[in-house]
Amino acid sequence: MGIIEDMKTQSKTLPLWVYRALLVLAAAIWGLGFSIGKGAITLVGATWFTAFRFLGATVVLALILWPHMRGHLDRKLVKAGCIMGLVSFLGFWSQFIGLEWTTPSKNAFLSACYCITVPFIWWVVSRKRPNGRVIGAALVCAVGIGFVSLNESLSIGLGDGVSILSAFLYGGEIVVIGLTMKDNDVLTVTVVQQLVAGILALVVAMVAQPWPSVEVLASPEFLGAIAYVVLGSAAFGAIAQNVAQKHIMPAEAGLLCSLESVFCAAFGALFFGEVMTPKMLVGFALIFGAIVVVQLHPNDPASSRRE
Image (cartoon, rainbow, N blue to C red; front, side, top):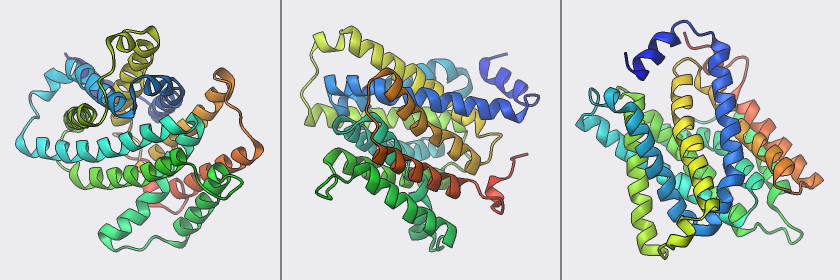
C-alpha cells in the first residue's frame, strides 16, 4: 500500500485535534520560512526565488505523489491546475518582492490580510455583499495596517505596499481555487499548480533578472534557505494543508494557517534580532484580531466541523 493509501486509511481513525495540530505545525514552519527565505531572496532576487521555490516543490511532491497522480491526471484537472498556478505565481511573487523590501514580520502580517480581502473579492464575483461583521473587521484591519506600515510622513514604504497588494492577489487565488477545485483530485492538482507557477516564475526571471551566479547558488546560505523553503514551507506545507482541510472546515483552517504571521513575528524577535516597536505590536494585534473575527464566528456555518 502506497503512502497516499496509508494516509487515507489512517485519516478515518485520527481525532480532529491531529489535523488541527498539523496545520499549526505547518503555520510554524511557514512563519520561520519568512525569516529564512529573506536571506535567499536577497541573494538571488524575488523572481528567481519564486521559481526555485515552486519548481523544487514540484519535484519533491511529484516524487512522493506520482503513484497517486497517474490515476487522476486528465485535461480538466490540468486546466484547473494551470489557472491555479497563474494566480499562485502572482500571489507568491508579489509577497516575495514585498519581503525583499520590508521586514519578515511586517510582510507576514500584511500578506495575511488575504483573509479580509476574500469576502470583498467574492462580492465582486458573486455580487453578494459582505455582512456588517466582515466590513467592521476590514476597517479594524485597515487601522492595523496603518499602525504597522505608516511612517512619520504618513506614507507607506514600497515593500509594505507590495505586501498589501499580495493580500489582494492571495484573496483572488483563494476565490479562483474555490471555483476551480470542484471535481478535481486535490493532491494531483496541487502538483500541477506548483509546476505551472514555477514555469511562469522561471520565464519572468530569465527575462527580467540577471542569472544568479554559480557561487551564489552553491553557497551554504542559499542552499540551506532554499532547502528549508522547498522541503518545509512548500512541499510539507502543501501536503499538510491539503490533508488537514479534508477534515477541517475552511474558516477554522484559515485561522490556523494565518498563525504563520504570529510565528514569524515571534521567530524574528527571538532568533533574528528583529525589533518590534509598540506601534507595530498594536498593528499586529489589530490585524490578527480582524482575521479571527472573519474566520471564526459562532453563527457562521462555515466554522462548523466537517464530517
